[in-house]
Image (cartoon, rainbow, N blue to C red; front, side, top):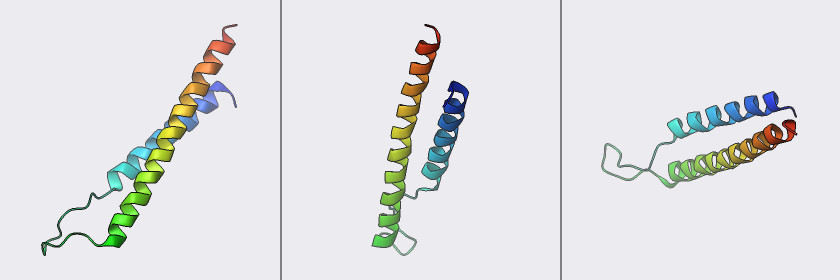
Length: 74
């Protein structure tokens, strides 16, 4: 994958992670004073796991981009 392609994938992964983060609802009290149900909490946990995976992907892509930058200067 060339350097420009890595940058595009990195940007898309970051954008997707931020969109998912904006959709995550932290467990809060509902209008009736009860905590959200377990299903909502499970969904939030799954979304947080996806965000963690995307963040790890971003780190790997950034490292790959740095490698390509240093390699192309040789």
